[in-house]
Amino acid sequence: MSKTTIALEAAVAAVIAQMPRAGTVSSARNRHNVDVAFGAILKLIAPRIRHFIRQYGLVSHWEDAEQCCAIAVHRAIMDYDPTKAQFTTFINWQIRGELQSLRFRLMTDQRPSAKKVDAVTVSLHAVVSNSDGDEATLESALEDDGALARTEAGASDYLALAATASLIEVYVDQQRAAGIEQLRKRPRPKRAPRAEPVDHAEAMLRQPRTRGLCPLELDKLEHKLARDKEIVERRVFDVTTLNELGTETGVTKERVRQITKRASRGIAELAGAHPRFAMMAEYRKPKAPAARVRRAVAVAPVSILPALGQAHNTLSRVVAILPDARMSPIAGDQDAVALDGVTDAMLADAGGARADAPVGSTRH
Image (spheres, one colour):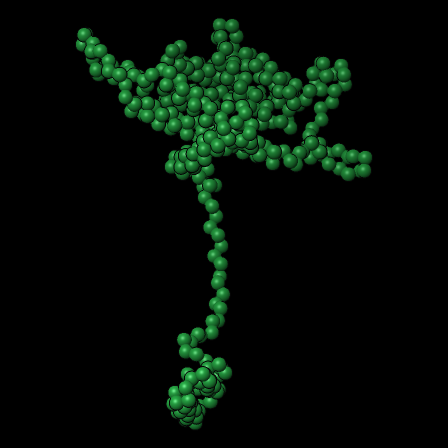
C-alpha cells in the first residue's frame, strides 16, 4: 500500500474511534478530534476530488461539487467496513455517485429521459433577445416587481391578525377572571359538615379555580364570553354592522354598542399596560397638533370718561317750561319769576363754563 492509502486508513480509524457509541453523547474533545481527522482525510483525497470534478464537467460549479464530495466522504466513513475493501476504493464510488447526482440536478438535459426528448438546460442568467432585438436575461423577464410589496403586505396582515387574536384572548381571560370573582362573592348555601377529616393542604392543591361554583353559572359565563368575543372581533376589528350582529347573535343594537364601547376601552388599556402589545399602543397615541401662532391684534385703549368733542356731551340750549294757564295769577307769576331766575342762573353758568373751559368741554 502507498503512503496515502496508509494515512487514509489511519485517519478513518481515528474518526471511527472517536464516534460516540449508541446511547452516549460525545464530548467536546471527541468532536474536536473528529474534526481534525476529517480535515486530514479531505486533505489527503483533495487531488482525487479535483480529478472527479473535472471528469464530470462541474468546473463551473466547483464549490457545490466540493460540498458534495465532503458529504460523500462523511457517508463513506459511516458505512465503511474494513473487512470488505480499502477506504480508497470505497470512497471512489461514493464521490462518483454524489457528483453524478449533482450533475443531474444542475444539468437536466444529461439525464437519459431528457435525451429522449432533446431537453436543453437553460440558465436564468443567460442573455436572450426578444422580437425587438433587445437583450435581457430570463431572470429579469420573470421578475415580479410587485412581489416584494405583496409579500410584505401579507406578512404584515398575518402579524396584525395574530396580534389582534392574542389581544382579544387576553381581554377575554381578564373578563373571565372578573366574572368568576363576581360569582365567588355571591352568597352560597351552607354545606353540611363532613365527618371524615380533610387534608386542607392537599385539597387546596387539587381544587381548580372554579371549585365551589355553580356549573350552570359557569356555563352562562362562558356562553356570554364567547358571544362578547364574537361581537368584539366582528365589530371592533371588522366592519360588521349593528343590524347584522343583532340579527345573528340575538342582542339588541344598544347592547352591542355597550359591549363594543367597554371592550374598546379595556383593550386600549391592555395594549398600553402589557409589554407584548407596546407597539400597538404606540399606534394608538394621537399626534400632537401643530401649535398655532396667534397674531397680536392692536386694540385701541378704551376710556371710561365720555368723549369731550361729541355734540351730545355739550350744553346747547335751555328750554323754559311755561306754567299752566289754569293756575292762579299770583301762583303763576311767582312760579314764572322763580323759573326765570333759575333759567338766568343756568345760562350764566353755561356761559362762564364755555369761556373758561376749552372747546369740547362737557357740562351737564
